[in-house]
Length: 280
Image (tube, rainbow, N blue to C red; front, side):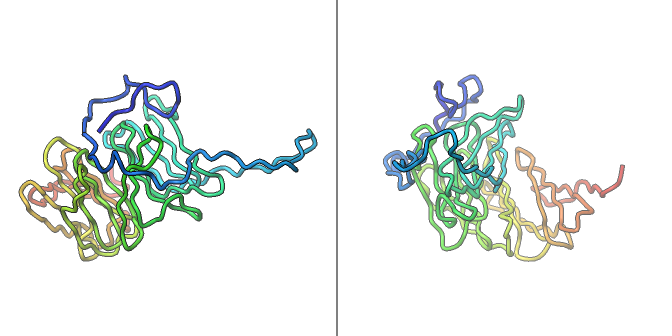
């Protein structure tokens, strides 16, 4: 994946901030024309507009936050709004760039970064979405357009990226794609998952994926290198959130009850530690 190049415009990360995360874009992504409306539309002119000092311009409402997510190494985070998306650096904290598509729409309900390169996954959201909520759009901020898309029969709840995989989460199903050619590799059935819960390992090794299972409180762990699937009944209540260690060897889970955080070994499913709310 190409990293952000030096550019006087604030749309790109400075080269010194970029780790070397290389991945060649597939040809179909490079050639695909964008169906995206002009992201920087020219304001319509009105010859009857009163430009006198007495004229009062309508106030533009502040954007509404729709989505937040960290990149894979937690050095940046992305915010989806009802007008576009913003990218921030974590340390030191600063805004890196933003895309405001249209103040009459342009909502982004999911924005997922790929480390610090200029390729992002976008899904429309909010009352006036920029893209259909059932499509994942691959956005190239260097070209200022979408270079690929994947469509589904229902709304996309979340997206997870690795340098070699794209994982798309619907309410009852998860799809795993090869990044290079968008070939579908795997489908997973889940219990109702309106929050789009899913985590993927980011280490150099093979993909490890965790998602809700087929019953309340259950998590499913997929080890793609060894082609093993592990089911763990992690909690009695519904799963509220979970997180991997970077290498996918450890999994922390919490339920909607909110009293316990449990840490599991993902290889054998054993419980390693339990932390109770209020304990010291």
